[in-house]
Image: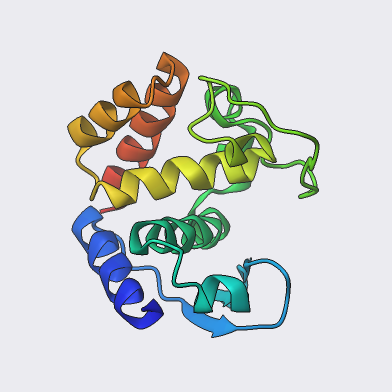
Amino acid sequence: MVGRTCQIVCQKMSTVGLRIPHKVHYNGHTETWVNEKQSTIFLNPEDRKSKMLAQQTMQHLLLHEIGHIFVKKFITRKIKKDPEFAKLFGDLTKHYRRKLTRITTKGDFISNYAQVHPEDNFCEVFAVYCSHEGKIRKVYKHLKKARKSHVVRKQAYWVHKFIKKLR
């Protein structure tokens, strides 16, 4: 299932206009993680073998991890320091230490996991944007259905504009 999912993810990224080379490896860790410098995603055995994980969920997981690679390659320190960017996503210059406290649903975040760290906030928005193949109206429709606030809509639009500039 992972191989086919990787193909779908690459196809969605291509539709958005991005080609971010990456490798997927399997590991024995308890969670999936990414080494941005090597552009390598390490899938844990639970995610890889799970018949319960829907293909769509696996696609989102891979797109999220590719989002970390995207941050490393394209989101410069200058962008991270930009007040507009920091207001939308949080301070990505902060040391990556996830807040593992109990997370409650908030409309100003695209997902519960987006609340863990500002970089994960960005990666979650990136993943949703790419999963909808960069079609901003589809993204907005998804956000409206999920009852997300105007903040999340602005985040998605920022990603949309930035990726368009990269083309």
